Image (tube, rainbow over all chains, first blue to last red; front, side, top):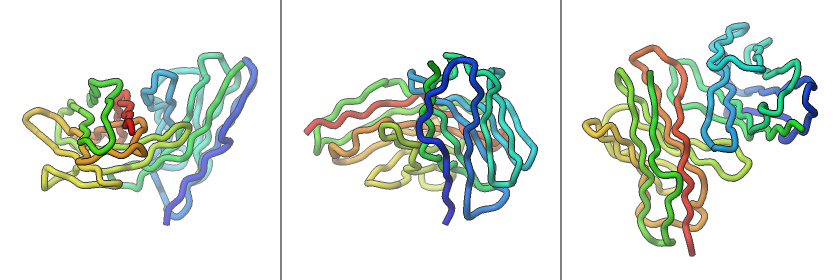
Length: 112
Length: 115
C-alpha cells in the first residue's frame, strides 16, 4: 500500500533562517505531488505541485520554493523565513490519472 | 477557474441527530467532488468522492454526500452524528475537463457534536 511521510512534525525557526521540509511517498511511482499551506484562517492554499521530476508549478508567488529531486521526494524550501510563513504545511500525493489526493500528517511551522 | 464555497464556518448538532455540512462548487466543465476530514494538528483524511453515476455516494464512517448538478451542490450528510465526528470538514473540487490537475478546497466547516 502507499504511504506518505512528512517531517518534521513541528518546527520553530527564527525570522531570516532557512527552511527545508521534506515529503516522501512510498508504494507508488510517478505520483503527482503537492504542497499546501493552512493558515490560522483554516483555508487550504495550494503552494506548489509537481507532475514529474524537476517539474514544479507555483500557484502563489511568495518567499518559498519547491524541488523534486527524485520521483517520490518533494521538498519545500525557503532561503529566509518571514513571520508570515508561519502555518501548517501539508504535503499530498495523487496517482497519475487518479482523482483524489492523500495527505501527510503535516508540519506545524512557527516563525519567531 | 474552479472554486468551492462552504457557507457555514461551524455546524452544531446533538449526538444522535442527523447532520448536514453544505458545499457548493463552480467549474467550467464536469466536476469531480470530494470530502475530507481533519482532526486537530493532523493531515486531511479522504472521506468520499463523486466522479460519475449515482448522485448519492457513500464513504467512510457512515458519511454520505449527494451530488446535485442543478444546484451545483455536494452536501455531506450523516443520519446519526457521533461526538467523535467533531472535526474540520473540507469540500474540494477538480475540474477534469479543463485539464487542471489540482484540487481546490473550500475554507472548511467545523462540525461540533455535543453529547
